[in-house]
Amino acid sequence: MKQSHALAVSLAAIAVLVIGLPSRTATGQIVASERSTLSQTIDGTVITIDYSRPSRRGRAPLFGGVMPYGEIITPGANMATTLEVSKDITINEVAVPTGKYSVWVSFDAPDAWRVGLDETWQRFHGPHPTADELEILIPVSPHEVSAELETLTFQFPSVVADDAVLRLQWGATAADMSVRVQPTPMENLSAADARPYVGKYLVDVVKIPPFTIYEGPVEVEFVYENGFLHSWMDIGPYSDPHDLAFFPKVDQVLYPVELINGEPANNFGGMVYFEFTKDDSGKVDSFEARLPGAEDTLWMSGTRID
Image (cartoon, rainbow, N blue to C red; front, side):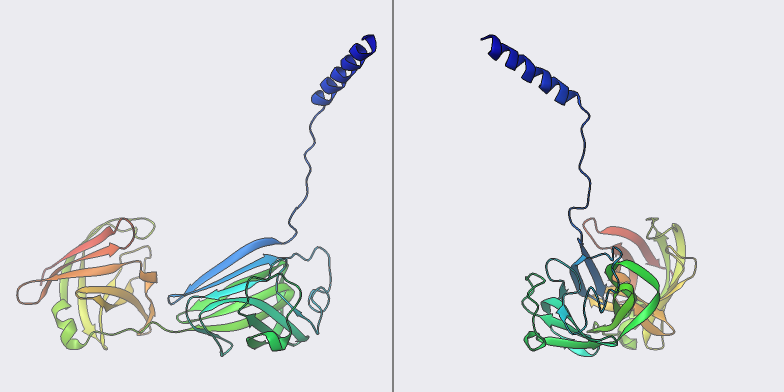
């Protein structure tokens, strides 16, 4: 009994000592290549890349070393990198139908790669497919850049109208790919269809930062010139006026598209639409501009004054 009591006392003392010791938290990166998602909308087409991002961590060379020439490797780590497109596109003029793909790179030579797409998208980074097993092969030409990246990165350095540049970069080596989407068809208003809208309006603008920093009354004129119903509007988050052309969405509802050098260039991502009302003669007498969304926010309202 005395020995049992002594043992119990000793264990209790050890427990107190252990509890009293400062705790130590283990540190370290559990996942060496963190998962990342890149999504870009181009004229209504959504392009999404999901991948794990390995870092250099002192390794060199990256291409031709970590990713050896003569092999086919997913540009990432862990699970295969995936590319998903919501509509048909082309990459470097190679057709890529709507769908989701695993992404691979055939490192044929230092100056000649091929990006391969496989419809079997949910797969581990190994074993690697052969070139014959890939449904789509896209030639790319890598080049050196001045700004190095420690971590493998996909990005869109340029997005203009219905095309963009998709870049894969690691270290000082990058491969740029030209991405083109199907342009949204734009049915323009004829001179006869635009005639009921032409005129001057007194417009009350609601201040909705950061979308617009202006509020109060302003005079706006709609004209038909150079094949467009358009208006110059200096209301919004910028000091320079926008030359806006208006295209039909549904009956008496138009959406604005910014004209640059006389050509449609920016539809503002569908952030605003104009709803017009007509009098008994068929002439527009008022309109409301709204920001679509859950609250359908009123941005401006106009009444004809001419």
